[in-house]
Image 1: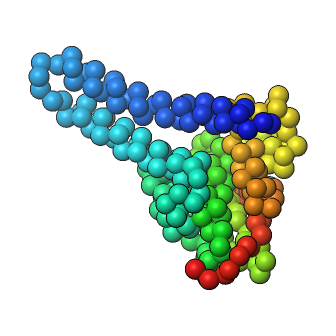
Image 2: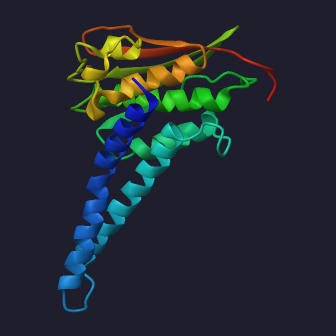
Image 3: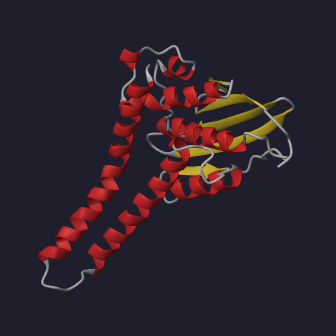
Length: 217
């Protein structure tokens, strides 16, 4: 898939994910405008909740899809952003896995990959569940994984082909672009991504990325 098509699909996906909370803010403001000058507490609560949700999503998407080097976002920042993104939702986040120290020179890029792995995992939990992040230093590689577990794991038939880059342009749309984009991120660092640890109620999305540069932080 060419970069222009990939960018268009990601933009479509972002608009879809943001239209809900932004629309709720607009509806709340319209309700206030239809009133008689008073401020309805319930309407204001709706606006505030939707504004917070929009902010959380924008912050997460900026970290997941923006330039990894912008702002120097590492594992610590990524875990905070992810915690806010999933807070109060159907999915519980577990980021207790140890992160490598000293950190690799490509820490920001690895942290961005984890955020994208989380989105891949979340897509497999339509009824909610748990996402567990693990980051491990394996000498010359960084192993990144997200384990998705829940009551109704959903794995698309062609998910593995979208993760390993074998998917065709015709089989990828805005709803199914996330695994393909994640695979492109990992491949850009010389790594690979695949499914693993598949059981009745869980599956891992795993990426392995070469350690590069000076190991001091």
